[in-house]
Length: 236
Image (cartoon, rainbow, N blue to C red; front, side, top):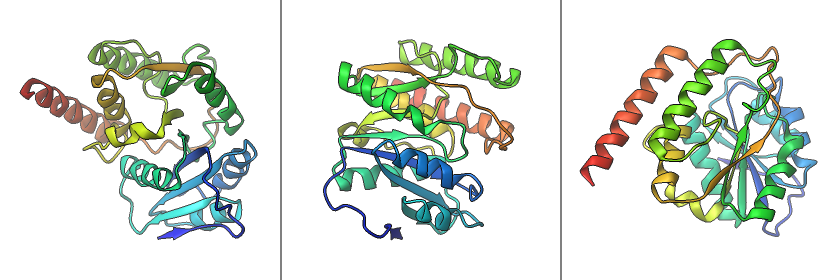
């Protein structure tokens, strides 16, 4: 179900921010407001939240698309991507709805994209790890090393969900994974097509929010995704 705020412009926006959100009623409003202040069209995909996430996001000025049940971050991203394609956006910036990504940094991605024309830009928090919990730091380093090796190119922070994609590439990122492993699978699919990728330095922000990642379950999903990916590549 699509819900658009009153007074939404009918002209195609050049840039869209896609924000997957689950149970973020306390945080989503300021994130939406700050993203809209950067001059981008904001799409919030409410992934079956049991709270008022959708209402708060809409009140803050977002276009809201609601999943009636929780389907996972990968599916929420796909829903947002499809809407961005319908709107005719040139590029999509993805960020989280819990405040861990500062919307004021959206212009950094846009500036890097317009200056270099590199179609895939990934946020990089690893250049300054102060404030990053030790477990996250070690996990990010290992996962980034592993995926960089798999892709045949180095990205310092493959686990960062703050990203820019040129919209015409979104047809290549239809992942089989529905949850957090989808973000790694997206990079694998783009790298396999030889597409250019680079990083944009962003802040490391950790507050009182609880991570939606479930360490054991999502680690198992990641390894299943990677095994499936490798089998598929060998079969080609």
